[in-house]
Image 1 (cartoon, one colour):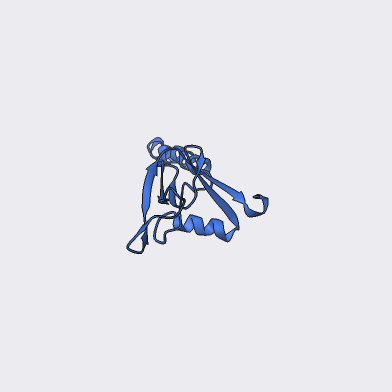
Image 2 (cartoon, helix red, strand yellow):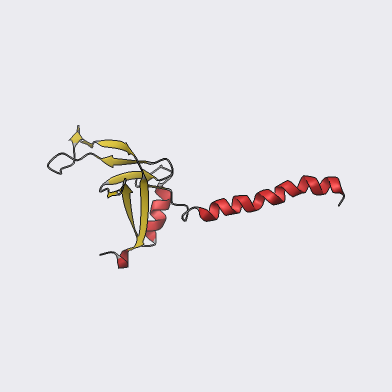
Length: 115
């Protein structure tokens, strides 16, 4: 190997640890969770449910019920709208949804340890 070919190969070798480091720091790759089929977060959600994990979604520190999709990287959730009496809002046979932006935390825990 001469000097020129070594210098061409060196940037590729240096770039590999950076890529590996980025994937290791992600919390298990579950930045997006969704119950909607066809959404990018649907497969990670199915994997968690298959492993009997419980998923809790927090928006700005408050636990959110009835979340359809949560994206921690982009900071938003899609959830069902509730009426002031706590019922689900609907129109023409469809449940109404809204997208809310803020600090999103996806908490994953074992079902056996959850109260």
